[in-house]
Image (tube, rainbow, N blue to C red; front, side, top):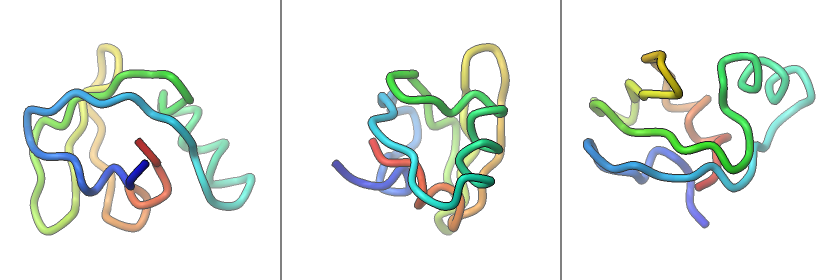
Length: 70
């Protein structure tokens, strides 16, 4: 298992765990980041990611992406 920031552009990965405080986990869940969901990395710049989650594109900064374990 590794943080989402380690995924490369174009790669599709499955979320295994969400870490952080309850508020952070709830916020990520509301954005669609839940365990066993597939996400595709659209692009990456300095650890900040643009991700395809279900039918939406979402930008996550490096600190939030580190909380998503794949």
